[in-house]
Each structure stands twice: as structure tokens, then as C-alpha cells.
Length: 303
Ligand SMILES: Cc1cc2nc3c(=O)[nH]c(=O)nc-3n(C[C@H](O)[C@H](O)[C@H](O)COP(=O)(O)OP(=O)(O)OC[C@H]3O[C@@H](n4cnc5c(N)ncnc54)[C@H](O)[C@@H]3O)c2cc1C
Image (tube, rainbow, N blue to C red; front, side, top):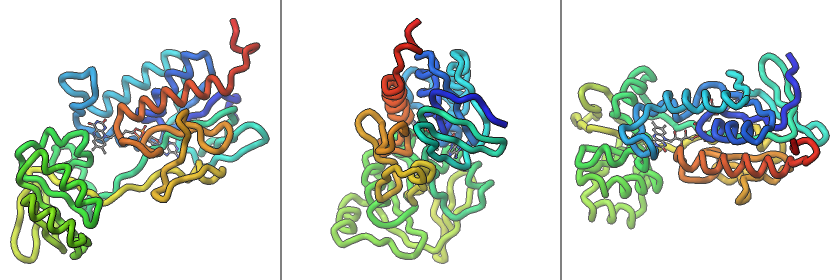
């Protein structure tokens, strides 16, 4: 299948990609979104920090509303995984299972994938739905106020997350599954000063009314655990056409969301930022407006 050339192809239909699609469609540009259905937002049981929804909003419901709004103005959405991206003279060619499509500009909004703790996926997903496993203290630290909370991880990343969560609860434990906490003396002293416990594995994670951690020396129970095991940044399509990425794999952009490759833009979690819906949307609106201005061909746009 060969689709007609678009002004812009967006890879990723999460909050960033769908916001950009809405803006571009409303700028009277032709835009197609490709999405393989793995948005981090889809795993949000209820978001309470997304402005405009005082009762909270389910992540999948938010995405469905955003899709409806973008398609209403003419954005096309294809539920397909993009398998390759290449340059063809001034344009880009995007490949997917059923064919190829070309575009004058491409926005990468592919997000990141959180690393899960070691436990069966079914149990993990059930715990995520019930708020027993959480991934984002910035998003939902409020919901664990005064609860029993554990951070799963080691080293500076888990240390920083433990400190952040200490402003919500006195009952914080750092659990290092590998058997080594990898904290330096200063970090250990700070955790002790704040009453944050440190336990090392190996242990098993079970899901009952609470999260149950079974160690060789007994069990511990928590109302919520936060894995702080890092994430994998989906920036390989961009780096494949020469975009610069950071040490962690985030796509480097300027203040207008342009990469170093002309015509290639990036927004959302795949770029360094706060990893929040509002930030993804903000970056996407800047990216879409930059794309509109960079592509601007007055003879084609003036009505
Ligand atoms: C459990 C959880 C709770 C959260 N709670 C909140 C909250 O309450 N408030 C908040 O602001 N943020 C929250 N977040 C963070 C929020 O989900 C992300 O910041 C947001 O989803 C980022 O949007 P994005 O569009 O950049 O990436 P994503 O939403 O991850 O979307 C990326 C999209 O790209 C697609 N994709 C990737 N590669 C390809 C490819 N090759 N081809 C086609 N499609 C591709 C994926 O299918 C996906 O749909 C939470 C995250 C998690 C995990």
C-alpha cells in the first residue's frame, strides 16, 4: 500500500503525537499519525493532576478523546507500527507493515518504556490498575500521602525518588532487588537521617490487598511500590537518520523542538523533560507550530 504524501507524519499517538496532530490539522496541513498502541498514558488508571478534570481522568479515555478531536479536523490515524524511517532527497519515507508513505516533515513522539520489576506481567498489570504499583511520583505522590511506600531500585535514581516521596510519607523504604543498594556514604547517611529504610534482595513481589514483599527473612507490606529501574527511550528511528541523542537516549532538540536533522522534530517523553502529559502536550504544540512555519509555502496555504 502506498499512501499519498503528507505534509507531516507523526510517529506515536500518545498525548504528544495527538496534540501535534490536532494543531497541524487545524493549520490546514495534511497529517497522518502512526501508533502501535503502547502509550504510557493508556496505563494510567486515573490521572488527578491533569488540569481541567477535577474528578480525574482515565488515561485511555483521555487518548480516545484526543483521537476523536484530531480526526474531527482531518488528521488520519493508522494503528500501525513504524518499522523504518529514511530520507529521500528533501522528504522522509516512513515504512510500516503494509507499505511506505512519504512526508515533508516527521515528528517523533514515541515516548519511553518503563522497566518493570521482576514479577509476572499479569500480576504487575493488575497491581498497576489498583494503584499498588505506581511509576510516577510527580503524578500521583499525592495519592500515597501518609501511606506505606517502597521504592524498588538502587543507586542515585532510587535515592532521589525516595527523597522525593519522603515529602508525602514518613513510611518510606528503599528495596534493592539485586542485593546491592549501590548508595554512597553520603546518600546512606541522608536516608538514615530522614528515617528511610534500606533493604536488599533477593525478594519476591506478591499482590494481595497490599503489595507483599517476601524475603528470606520474612515479609513486608506496602500500600504502593514505585519501581525506579529506569526506562528505555524509543529514539532509534530518529538516531537512525542522524538525530543526536543524549547519553540516556533522549532525542536532543532546540527550543522549537527541531532535531539537528532538517525536517525532523521530536516531542514528549522521548525528549528530555518532565515526563508529564502537560509537558508532552506543550512541546507538541510548539513542534506543530514550528513545523507549520518551517513548511510554510504561502502559495499553497493562502486561501
Ligand atoms: C502508570 C503511569 C501513570 C502516569 N500518570 C500520569 C499522570 O497522572 N499525569 C501525567 O501528567 N502523566 C502521567 N504519566 C506520564 C504520562 O503517561 C507520559 O508523560 C505521557 O504519556 C507522555 O506522552 P508521549 O506522547 O510522549 O508518550 P506516550 O504516551 O508513551 O506515547 C508514545 C506513543 O508512541 C507509539 N509508538 C512508539 N514507537 C512506535 C513506532 N515505532 N510506531 C508506531 N507507534 C509507536 C506508542 O504506541 C505510544 O502510543 C504516567 C505514566 C505512567 C506509566
